[in-house]
Length: 187
Ligand code: GRF
Image 1 (cartoon, rainbow, N blue to C red):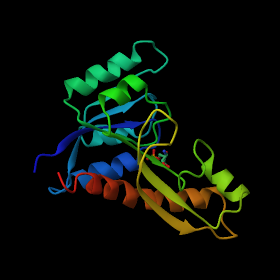
Image 2 (cartoon, rainbow, N blue to C red):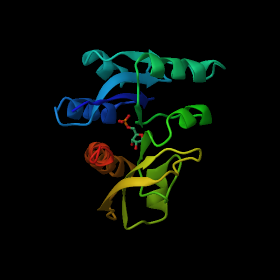
Image 3 (cartoon, rainbow, N blue to C red):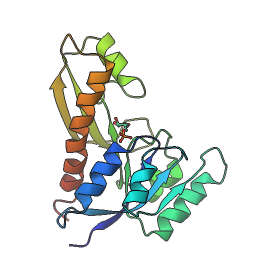
Image 4 (cartoon, rainbow, N blue to C red):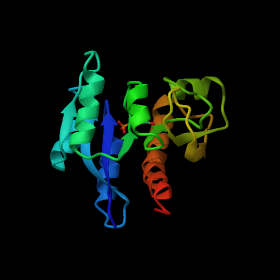
C-alpha cells in the first residue's frame, strides 16, 4: 500500500499529532506523516516531530509571505493530504483550493453545534445532555465542511471544563485515526 504523504498542522500540545504519528507506523494505516507545520514556535507538539524525526516548519502567519511559504513546503515534501490538529489559524482559500477534499480538521464538539472557541464552557452553559468531537473536511467557513465522523459521550451534572476536555480528547484520539481510515477505505 502506498501511504499518502501527509502534513499535520498544529499550534499547541499536539496530543492528536502524537496519536496519529503512532497509528501511522502501522503498515496498514493509509497515511505517513511527512511534515509538521506550526504557527507557534513554542508549541509543545513540535517535540513529537523532533522525537519521531519528522521534518517540521515554524511558519509565522503574521508575515504576508506565510501562505506561499506553506504551499512551497507542502510541494517540497510532496504532501497530498493535510490534517489540522489544534491549528489555531484559518486556512486560506488559496491552500484550500490547492487541496480540495484533502484537508480535514478535528473539532471538540458535536458539529454543527458550538463552532469556534470555548466549546466546553458553552456546552456546560447550555446544559447539553451529550457532547463529543467531530472530524470534518475543511472548507472556507469556520468548522463547517462535510462531516466524516462524530463520537459522543453523556455529560453529567458533575462535569466541569477540565473533565469535559479530558473525555473529549480521549474520544478524539479514537475518532481522528478512524476518520482517516474511512476516507481511504476504497482507495
Ligand atoms: C483538540 O481538542 C481539537 O479538537 C482542537 O484542538 C485541540 C488540539 O489538541 N481543534 P492537541 O493539540 O492535539 O492536544
